[in-house]
Length: 520
Image (tube, rainbow, N blue to C red; front, side):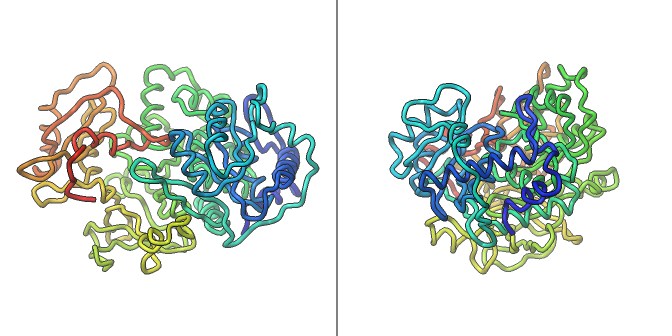
């Protein structure tokens, strides 16, 4: 399998169908394919050889989609850059991957110039913007205009498709190596679950550097849908884009859903979002209260969840739409991560990798064609993560008698209080059921008596009030006493990654600086 396969199919069978809607423009498959072939030619003309790494530092755009097709077309390897990182982290990832070409948009041209001056391996920076080309950079559109189309190299199979850097909040980022087979397999699994069907208008609201969006993009190229591009996420922007583009499918993180619901409640009643037929959510766990609220607001949309990680290309389990019902809400399955995707095995194991009984919490491990090739230039980390042929996710969870996976927490985020394991996700679910709570994050903080105690950081809904005592009393009615927060902190915002995951490392930092945590 190869990632440009879908594009070739629609160039042959549907060349005049609309491939992309972006900033008021409509680009057909024929127009898109020509630009991809010319960009691949330009890269080869710049000396990009087989297996060379090409990076892109950009907000979402038509050009980002072209990049994802043109780089493998040129027999090279993609390296999408997390624009939330510092310059030092970006330069580290580019030098570590020995990236030779960097493409930057208008919003990152200054950072691109800094990278150009400081990165050791970047030879060429291409400006993919609409303004004046910065000194020392080449112009993206000019390169496409002057380059003749080339044949697709059809880089495929177990050949390296991309290096997707993950982490960066503690220690150096790790480059996850994914093959064409890895990502194509995940794309096909999405299609078997009814996602990204022919004729679908998929709204890219997640950042395109993130693998979850790239996987959805790849599925859409196979089926032949239309990519509607939103440059950056905002609640208002997403809801307006749904109305403007008549989008019928979207991928969101739970915190993004929270923002949509809050904005819609206050401002959005006049917006028509009836075109939306499917909401796929993932990237982190969702509280039952938030999922219930979303189902009541987006009544015309089906919901499904994907569970996984970059190392799994990215999906390992899917909770399909049929389980988002009153029956499965009552059974609790609606709040699970679902069942393993096709051809993928999942086990729950103890610290010795022995499978634990159903209902017992352990580490989630995964085996299948979605599992990464390894970490770039990190053989020891690769061997540790893939020991025994299984990807060790670092997530704590359990499996019920029907094979459904329930994710409790990242094992490194688990609080160990008085010898008891407290899974923050369970506490966050209890807090989230309080009517005044918009969002919460639970961490462990130092305790001389217990080692760690449970601390909650909470954002309240606009115009409502709750006290620490009320939150603690609310939790005490729902979870065991040792899991109940001992302290509560109210904030206006939480530190988030670009896809809406809470940066618990940042929340823990003031409490644990110069101290040693009891867990890794």
